[in-house]
Image (cartoon, rainbow, N blue to C red; front, top):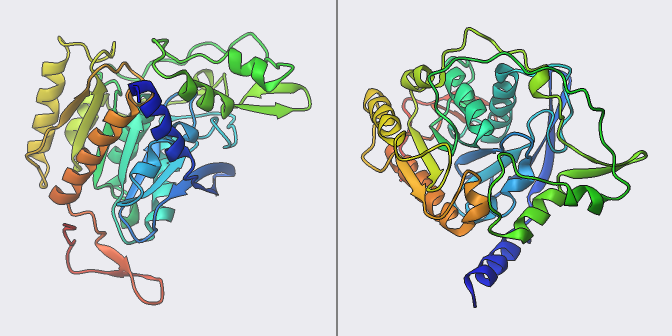
Length: 335
């Protein structure tokens, strides 16, 4: 079997294990998400990138579900979630923490994995989580997947797009217009076709992409938030980075500073570990798990396993027999 056929068989096996469809409402906005694995296992929350959606994780999450309770959400303005009049890093962080709080059920501190733009929003969630009154929101770890770490602060939003929503006569017509952002070579066309098909919905006017194309123009960011570098320095949970070897955002000249930052942050946390803080996936670009899904799963499982061993992930508050949250004397390390 060739590598491509092996990947396609692997992919087909994964998407056959469909996630349970769930939703919650936050500030009047419906947030859709999927769930895999037993609710009695430690929680991993997967966050998609810009103009993407939870179905990007359909062929990743099942391979984690034997050891983890996995959820993948559609951020507002993406996938099957509602659009907002305005968006912000804070509102996206609230969505991530709200889903984590619901699904952790008081038993475990979640680990959040975010790709690209989703990694930036996950970072804000991690930054906020230590201040959350509800212990179910306190993160046990943050895994950035090819997500830029910049010392620049928030930028002003771009102007509102002039073009109106574009409708297509058929779903297949819209799928043919699907493009990755940023553009890159396509390693597995069947994966692109799958996520493209889940990126489109049919309406009375025709087929349309689900993502809110005006999202960035509608961003109302909190300028008091620190830049990414400062934010990471202040995080109290471990931070790990998985990136594509050929990613335009993690070229060789940038890596020493990033590795030094994560090492500094790791030493500053009380649960500092000794495992690799940065993991490069060979022959992968920015969209790492579209390029090398099998290698990405292997890398992510290794990262999650090390965080589980090095970090107390059981919540300091756990459900008692009545299902209510009761305090525990100490966090328990899960082996």
